[in-house]
Image (cartoon, rainbow, N blue to C red):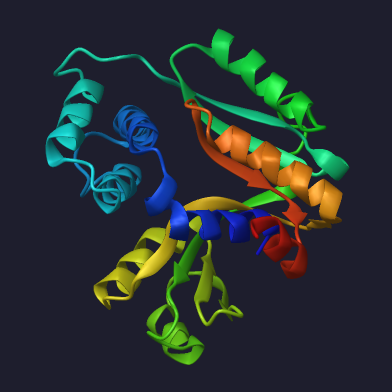
Length: 251
C-alpha cells in the first residue's frame, strides 16, 4: 500500500474526534448526487456507487432525512444544485504523482484554488492525463485486526477476482480486488460481519516514490490541504513514507 493510503487510514481512525462534520456531510451529499445522476438511478440496490455513498453517509451518522433529500434532489424530484465531476492531476514534492477527484458547482473557482494549493506545497498542477497512467483502479477493503485470517478470506473470496490478500503490521488485513469483483467481494465480507476501516474502489499506484522527512512533511501538508477543500472528494498519490518518518510527523 502507498504511504497515502496508510496516512488516510490513520486519519480515518482518528477522524471521528476532530473531523468537521459539516464538511464531511457536504462531500457525501455531493457524492450521492453524482451517484444518482451518473451511476444508474436512485435505487441503491441497483446502483452500486450510490449504495457505497449511502453506506458512507450512515457510517458518518448522517440523518436519514438528509440522505433521502439528497437523492430526491439528484433525481430531479426536488430543486438542487448542478454538480460536475472533474479530475485534476499534478506533481507534488519530490516529483510524486497526485490525482484529485472533485465534485464542484463552479470549476472556475475550483481550478485556481487547487493550483494554488499545489504551488504552496512545492508542487504544480499538470495537464489532464499527465499522471493517471501511473495508477490502477482497484477495490480495496481493509479488515480490522483479529477477525479472520488470509486463508479463510482466500476461500471466501475465491470467485471475486482478488489480486492480493495481505496481513499488515498492525494485524489488519488488506484485500485488493479488480473493480468488477469489488461489489461482490465487499458484500461477502460485510455479510460475514467483519468490521472494515476502508471499503471502496480507489486508485493504487503501480510504483511508489520513497520520500525523505522534509519531502514527506511537504507531501502530507499538500494532501491534507487538498482533502480539506470543499470540492475535493478523493486524493491519490504514489508516494511512500517510511514508518519511522510517519510516526515522527504524527507525534
